[in-house]
Length: 319
Image: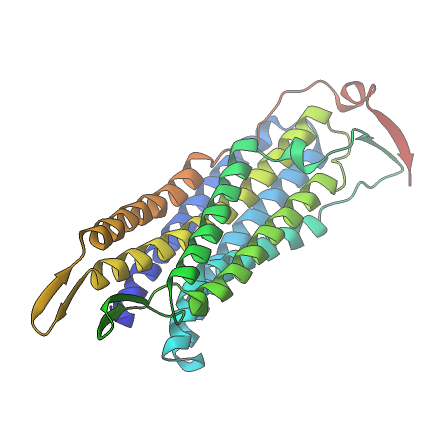
């Protein structure tokens, strides 16, 4: 399989990120504008605006990283190295996305003024992160790791998949995500998973929004965690999809090799390759679909006055 075909299979889904980013930013802008009219406190208005800005900048960073990689990749490497960079593209842009999200959490607005009220309820990643979306992120990461290990063990030289008929006859097809490609991808996957958990921890531990009901503060944290997980699961899903598509194509190729004009078709390899291709296409669609389905607004609540809502769960803090 040619390098151009591999690039097409892996980069085409990434090009969809541009469209997705535009949709997400537009929705975030419209939703935040409608929320301001029913916000119970100015501190919550500022917090919601900050959270929306973080998410928008993170998607802009993702798209910018994608464009930079595609523009400068040809001058940075060629040959087999280009294949490694193509495979790393989703995780590289994902790391950029998560870095912006983390930076936004570190610059979260802190309570100010001579008298401030904030909920004292401790928050953890488990209480703020959507369970289903977090599990899905780990499923993509686990599936990717298992697939890369399996391909690494199946490949003799780490770059292609070989098929042997007898002592004098053999054939190979590539590229194949063996250890040459899979090793860097395993490291990149681990980086994305760790970066995701760090961003979620920052969401859980960030300063509480002053003069805001605990339920509103928790709702805002949950939305922030959901935004982090939407992007993380997307890049992991696309990386897994790329691995499945490349591996499936290589298996189908090696399963239909001709030797001296005679076709050497392996039904098992062709069937296995086809199954991987179909699974890869399904994962490539599932990633952005889940991201769009979990695009939600920050819940706007017509809460009671902040002082009364926080009375049982907060203490005044002097400046």
